[in-house]
Image (cartoon, rainbow, N blue to C red; front, side):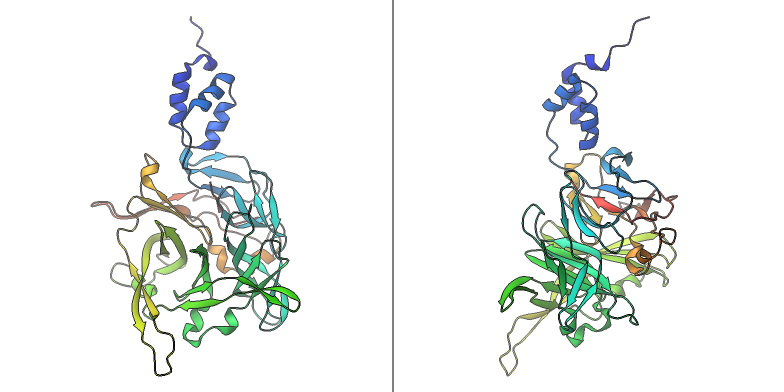
Amino acid sequence: MAVPPRWANLNIDLVTEIMNRIPCAIDRARMAAVCQAWLAGIARAEDLTFQLPSLFLPPADVTGVYCYLSGCREHSMLPLPGPRYFGSYDGGWFFLAYGQTRGHRLLNIRTGDSHALPDMVLDQAAHETHSMVILAAAISSTPDDLYDAAGIVTYQPDLDAPRRRHFAFWSQGDAVAVCNVLPGAPVAVGAGWEPEDVVYYRRNFLFLTHAGHIVVCTPIYENDDGGNILVVPWKLMPFLERNFRDCVWEWEYPASTVIRACYLVESRGLLHMVVRLAAHHHAPTSWFKVFDMQPFDIIEPDDDNEEADERSWTWYEVEAVLLDRMLFVGRGCSRSYEVSQYPGFKDGIFFLDDQSFYDAEMMFGGVSERQYPCNDIGRWSPPEGLLPSHVEFYFPERVPSHNSPPVWLLP
């Protein structure tokens, strides 16, 4: 009986062709470690120009990375089960809090580089400093350069007051963040002012509010007697009162439908709002709607010669916005990818379980009290021909995590 040939004896051209068909960088690296012949095959393989995010899923006791390019296989590579993760940035960077509510850092899981983030926020209107917890964050550039940052945070103004979500800003190396947008909010914004998502877009930080308005902020440093201070000029992009939320309860959806989350996503140079829906409060994700923003009217100058060209806006639904695109949604870190770069993939929306964003108390409890949900994770496919839209869930049996909600590991 003939002895099977060793893997190392495979023709190098065949090895190279196999490598060219493997889109996951981690799989390639592990194959290269098999033997010198396979390492040579990797060296001759085509470069991986494009990658997709991986799902970083910290359950109750261990940490795993699940790669969509590998068919959701697990890559057990990250030995950090303790911190609370609340966002990510390209190149393997994570926003995390080592102490759940303190010890905020920006960490590169691949290189080990890290930057301390503020644990305190200065309310400049009240001249008070408070402990804060960062819920989501975005930065203006790679952490290898000097960057500005904006976050959605929660803090307690005083012992008798409830916690509230707020805007906050800081720059690399700052020990204290500032929040100076909310106190000057125009009356027109009303009760829907709480921030839902934040992105860095065209040299500005954009916050999406609960009512569907957008607040545009541009942090700058100004010279003061005591040195440079961070100030945040801002402007409001008001959207119509009959906004995107009214579209949810129109003909095709039951009256019990609820909005799970809203995200801002840049795709092909434009900004979209992705709305995540569930059939009722206790149901998993059921549908998605995608909206673009459109100017509604222009306010003319009045008799006092106030500045003209102030606009109001409206959200309008775009049925074909996902054409040939995959959207990975997460607060502060949503990304868009072209299907044409990933043979075998189809357009759709990949989503995380981020219900804990609205639970301001969960992270303050003990380990046994924290129950970050981790099973409303999956991919939504839009209608295709006669086929209706549908949701494919990943890990529906996943138990809650004591450590952290899931997050994207961005390539």
